[in-house]
Image 1 (cartoon, rainbow, N blue to C red):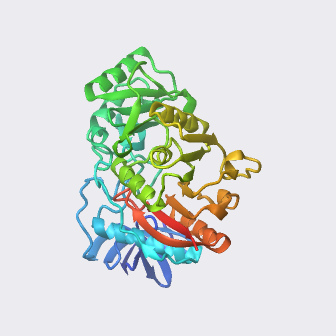
Image 2 (image 1 turned 30 degrees about the vertical axis):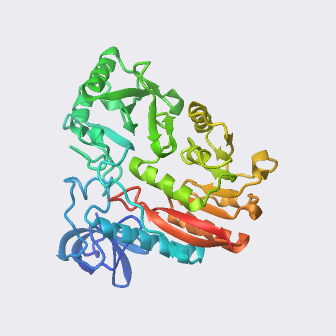
Image 3 (image 1 turned 90 degrees about the vertical axis):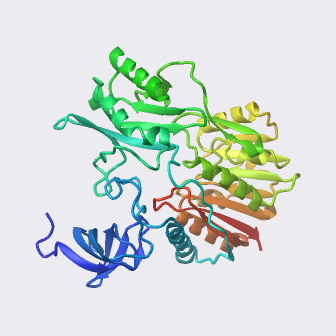
Length: 439
């Protein structure tokens, strides 16, 4: 129930787009976030929530559409929370993300970018090779739902028949996947499925809250064989993940420009958009302006996604990552690819690191690829005096802007270039890359 004094329907002019892809308008001096609305539109909307500083609403009718409005390709758009911007033309999505990045630089970092890079784009559909799908057995309907969370209420799983952003192998098999789970005795004890698509195979990791009997294991095995999936199981924590059948091929992706094949485990972090990852690596290495004699420090290196390509271009590269399992796989990948000029270290880069040998290295270039929280904890500890150029790959514009302010004010760098990379088309996620040069 909503407050009696709250009008159930409103007409409102939309003037902006929020960080999560909702239209923003003002009514009676109060901000209103309207799902399904775009800047420049006038819409009739239904209020669905009221907070102290803003209201929330959903679009019922577009009275005056934006010139950038397009028909969503997916029949589940607006209901499924996997996408937020399918109703906005792709070019306008990019412009909106660039605007978010520029506003964050100004508002949070209090910095100005000297030059903007061309947006980096790649596959816009069936690009998502990593995902976590929710699973729910609905007793009243005797049906299993498989999908992302509902956009209106993330407590519920969207009932999907397909997904246009997941890799085709999975996105076109949501329906048979759900029907198979309905046949399992453990159908009420499977809360999620992790999707991990490699170059040669796709893994589905089934989280199960009770042991699977032999009949269920056989049903899973048959489904995998029928549809070409490798089936993995997760009975407990991350360390419990294992293949249903031993002896399968390793997961891996190739970086052909660098003669590399990088292997990974199903729950490892890899960049979601494979085609964008290829372009992003090439751009990052180009922006670093590398020379054969350079020594490069790669922080938050993960599996070596940047470290190993860097090793093909420079004399020495040091990769540092907080997760020990990823570091071991990075070392294994280096050995497997015949790389002997890369070394890897485990370190929590958010904490003090006094006395660490790699921190005292003589580096020419720095690459940062931090999580959403950013890199402020390590920036203040780095010996930046000899580093002439930094490339920062960001998955959160706010933390990038904050860290840009630190690099400019405290360390004498200039923000030479920045731009967005459309890693997650049709969503509001803003991935970006920035170049800092010593002033």
